[in-house]
Amino acid sequence: MKKLIIIKYGELTTKKDNINFFITTLKQNIISSLKDYDIDLKYDKGRMFIYASEDVLDNIIEKIKKTFGIHEINIGYELMGNDMEYIKSSLLELIKDKDITTFKVETKRSDKSYPINSMEVSRILGGLVLKNKENAKVDVHNPEMVINIEIRFNSSYIYFDKIKGIGGYPVGVAGKGLLMLSGGIDSPVAGYLALKRGVRIEAIYFESPPHTSDAAKNKVIMLAKKLSEYSGYVKLHVINFTNIQEAILKNCPHEYLVTIMRRMMYRISEKIANKNNCKVLINGESIGQVASQTLTSMAAINCVTPMPVIRPVACLDKLDIIEIAKNIDTYETSILPFEDCCTIFVPDHPVINPSDENSREYEESFDYETLIKDALSTSTVIKVENKINAEHSSIL
Ligand code: ATP
Ligand code: MG
Image (cartoon, rainbow, N blue to C red; front, top):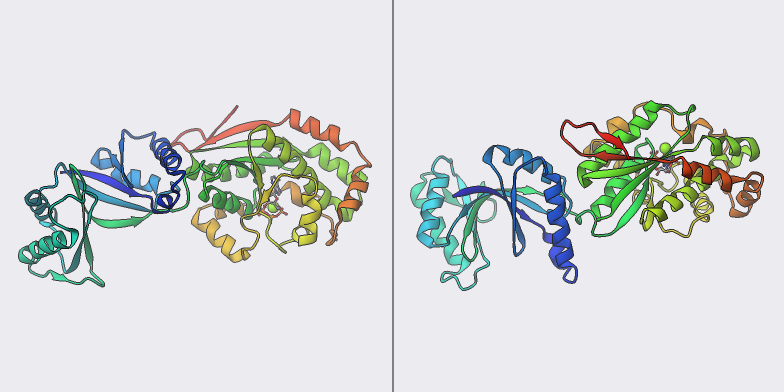
């Protein structure tokens, strides 16, 4: 008997046309998230099996709990055969030291030519447990222990505990998007939700030194690192936004500062996205949260790009966003008190109903295209990786 990890990926099986692509991507993602371990991975109809030395199985499970596309994880035992006597003796061996009260046996056969049907296998093994364990009682509705048996062609599997996987689609199956990542609470959550739908993300961060500090940038790198736990790595584009922001401040009515600043962010993001094969922009805008996130405001800002903008948290309550942020462990980083380029120039009374027309008129007062070109030409990229005890980033 060999102890191993069994993986199930429920939602994927419904995607008939793309199933091979889904499975290959999931396999690659698992292998890359486990690159620090010596593992073997086998795929067999609806299941993946991970073989590794027993002392690292728990660490491996912690890793794959963050791999999208996995719906259930089991620590199980592999039997190199499916003979009934062999299954019986193996099960007895496994429950030898277990205290069993109420239990049921669930059997699945992928080998339909197996001479005994699933119900019968469960019945035989249930009888065996009853005979060998004094306190054991069958309870099919609410058992303390479920004994799972899977019979395959040349092997069979026994497992007890089911661990819920994170679900979603494997990162990468949906293509790539560019996440506008600030140091706030909302955008890391938006990134996480996009990853969960199988979108690989690159990130873009606008900094305004000296108005924003290195500490503020490091906070964004820390958030990207948190996201990389779900995707292996995140490429973070850093844009120097100082000259653009100062030009807006100097040339545009103050009530339009935020609208125009955000339009500039969208314009730059679209260019970075196109250059890096990202099909959509993703951000943490949430309807009604601040003046720049009224529907009219979002429309006036969105006018500058034909690229689709995905807003995963648009319709969530702030409290629900915070709950996700806590679950994915970005919250404590997000609330660190570093200045953000959006907040340093915020006017007292931002316009609530800005228009595209007015914005364009004000933008004509300075040569923003040249400023955007300059900002693009000085942008830097940091590859933020999910590595144990490793330096978290490297400048590309
Ligand atoms: P967050 O909590 O994500 O910072 P927010 O509620 O503070 O969001 P805004 O500051 O208006 O809202 O920003 C809305 C969205 O615009 C952010 O969620 C983020 O996607 C993007 N954004 C804002 N500032 C930056 C920045 N400096 N760099 C990159 N993206 C930004
Ligand atoms: Mg913000």
